[in-house]
Image (cartoon, rainbow, N blue to C red; front, side):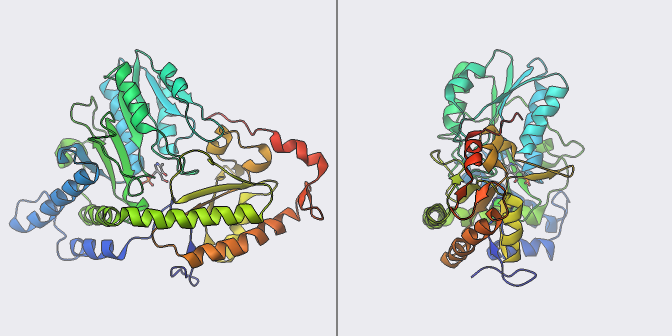
Length: 418
Ligand code: PLP
């Protein structure tokens, strides 16, 4: 049970934050840290092994994305760089277009870029989401305008796992105006959900993801840019990546990313079925054992590995602290910003009630999780929740339910704008 950790074995249920590097990935990349350390741009014969390795890896990514042209695949340092590059690059190449569409629940790698464009003169529509965390197609179509530059909508949400109808949104965009760029942040889906940029996603112009969410190391990402998309590079100062992303390539990690992709593709259906069964069991058992528990994103299409729950009347941070003491790693929806615990912008946008928005915990699984990990989480979680509720002034311990005066609060939305 569990994986080795610094203070003994741990149960790692925070795979949307990052994933353990697969041993096969380490084996594949090590030669490029040791013997084959060459700069891929060097002219001597030996360096060819590095440039060839990049070419092979690029081909592997191109196949993984549905058989796109390898020339449409750029290696970057992370998904944040890919998202920044895509959106700022589109804005710089199309200065006459001043309108951007995104959602209220994007990762900051997109949300903050859109806010920066807003600060510098663009108009940005932050599409709302409904209580399940989904975007309405009617709202979306209404938001498209003749001066829309780019649509940036994530493939799946990192906090709730809610999957957005990207194929449909991209198609609607192109039907309205083929020159509007469509970008999707696929950081949470690459390796979990098939991505076919020649088929279902044929209307997507740009797509980003990151190695460390699919068992490759941190420090390598991908940006797909469809041939013909009007876009300008962000990183300049070198000829690498065809002059579209300057900087000496991170050969070992690019090789590792290609190996991780190979692993993810090999037994994808079987792994997905197993992870989904573990996640569903965790969800079912926690709902059965804990009153006043909500599954955020329930009813919407969700990633098979993600469970985001809110426990009314307690703080997610308190839960995480106790889970941590027991060697279980998960995460909460709160971000500690400037000393105050801000509830998640995603849950607020979904209208999660005030009493639940602070009490959210995200469990995210990977291929390395076992039945025993889930047994342990099911075993300890209800006790943790009960112990924290005992301290809540709103909780009636004897009746194991909220005090009557707190019942009304259950329906109060937390509100929230990006
Ligand atoms: N986009 C999403 C949806 C994410 O979940 C993350 C990381 O959590 C990022 C972007 C940023 O990825 P990176 O850490 O590779 O920059």
